[in-house]
Amino acid sequence: MAEKNLAPLSEADGRRLLAEAQKFRAKAYAPYSQYQVGAALLTKSGRIYGGCNIENASYGACICAERVAVARAVADGEREFVALAVVADGPEPGSPCGICRQFMAEFAPRLTLIMANLEGKTRWGSLEQYLPYAFSKDYLEVEEAE
Image 1 (tube, rainbow, N blue to C red):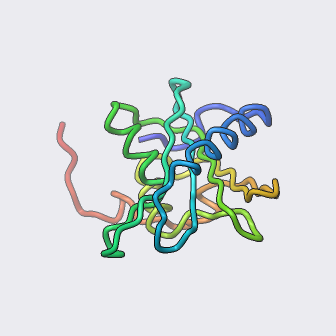
Image 2 (image 1 turned 90 degrees about the vertical axis):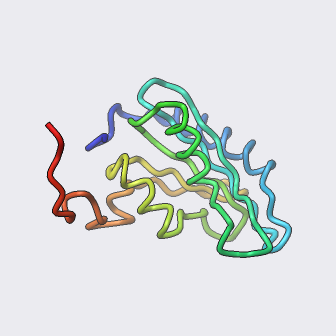
């Protein structure tokens, strides 16, 4: 589990992540809300994993773009994340929901977040800012295997 940002993120890398998130936003399956979201996750290895939101008629089965990106990275063996960009259409930059914040905190509690809307308004921050005191293994009384 990464305990901090693994590398400084340049503005150019941030713009590149936003561009990738925008590409994935176009792939979103959002027939019910019409709210398309794209995400791009940068890993320590330098790879970028994208995701889009996928809705379902049974709303509880929907999955957000951020969790799709993280799940793809984890399934590929990645565990150390540097930054995640999110792009959505709205008056303000799209922000990860609470479930996504908790999901990302499992791997990178201090992940850099870059959020944007289609008009180019952006907001940079850290996951720790948006989810202070995230629930973690520290709250569980579990003995670690040696």
